Amino acid sequence: MKRRASSSGSGTANGGVLEAGWVTYVVILLVTLVSVFPLYYTIVMASHTNAEMAASRPPILPNMSVVDNVKKALELAPLNRGLINSVIVAGSLALGTVALSTLAGFAFAKLRFRGSNILLAICVATMMVPLQMGVIPLYMLMARLGLAGHLTAVILPGLCTAFGVFFMRQYVASAVPDELIEAAYMDGARPIRVFWSVVVPAVRPAMAVLGMLTFLMAWNDFFWPIIVLSSQNPTVQVSFQSLATGYAPQQSIVMAGTLYGTVPVLIVFAVLGRQIVGGIMQGAVKG
Image (cartoon, rainbow, N blue to C red):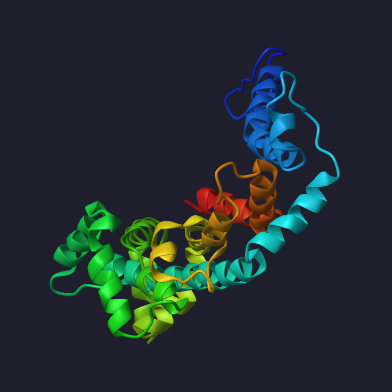
């Protein structure tokens, strides 16, 4: 027999079903409001002028002025070009990082070769090196290759990350049994066949998580793109700086541009969020 949770919280019984109480719903509601508030306040600020927001009673509701402010932001900064470039950069980095990190993670976790532990240790150690320390030699390399000012200079250095390799190595080691790998070898499969037919289906939840994290980090990256790209070929984060110029920038225009640049990320979450969460839960149940 199932045991229901008490009205003031949640509970469970041995072999029973955990059911949420009103306290759980209140906590979820509060967390949701806190999470959504920055986005809502961005919409409010994008709808009003600096004077209106600095009033003793600032507005708390948005209005249709946000549409006009978005149009002004598009006139002041190359946001459309930045959006297209950011989609190209973030999408390329997400796909490249997932593919290469999964391959490397499989090699470190399931293949036996001399020096694997040392190579993995070196790979993880690079995570401790700040990006700022390698900016000058990296820029010199991109300039010598003739890539400075091109999107390739942003994509190429980040196609595979130490975090991605370590993350996928740990997941492959725990999610793919050695017996399954050995059975595939006994059936005559080569390593690339084992990777594609055995490893990839088992680690899809981790691939989805790594892809989403990489996409978001690439989308929000400002430091390296502003160094290596020109103002005529920016990413969306670099194009925002054109909105904040002047002694007293109009915050409504800045927030309208920021809101415009956030829409693609919200669309990605709206379309793929359920599949990503479902994949994570599926991987957790299998684990």
